Amino acid sequence: MARILLVEDNETNRDMLSRRLVRRGFDVVMASDGEEGIASAGTHKPDLILMDVNLPGVSGWEAIQHLKANDQTKAIPVIAVTAHALSTDREKAMAIGCDGYEAKPVDLPNLLAKIESLLHNPKSGP
Image (tube, rainbow, N blue to C red):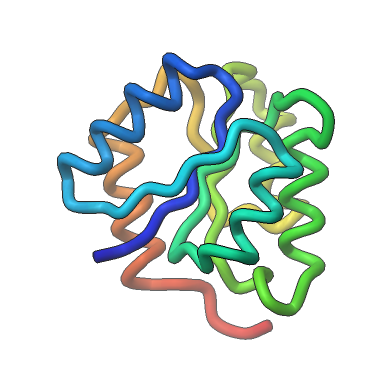
């Protein structure tokens, strides 16, 4: 069973998405802000991270950069999730090392396809 770390500050969004992922057989660990997400990634060693980029305190952007700079977490695939569906956000996400990008509201079948693809075909190399 693949473990997904869901980093989302909105409780309703976190609850809804986590329940949907659990129903599809994923083990879901949750964090409500960037700092907690960074700590959870180190503790729980997820197979994939779904990171809201608009978080209080340490933003999702900052958390992703931290995770990708850390030898213990840099290989974990990260999908950036944001309500700001701008092309510049997608470009920024890829530039800082994200493996995918999903706009809110989340299109669950599309997100699941991205998750499955990344779990079965992770990036190779450093």
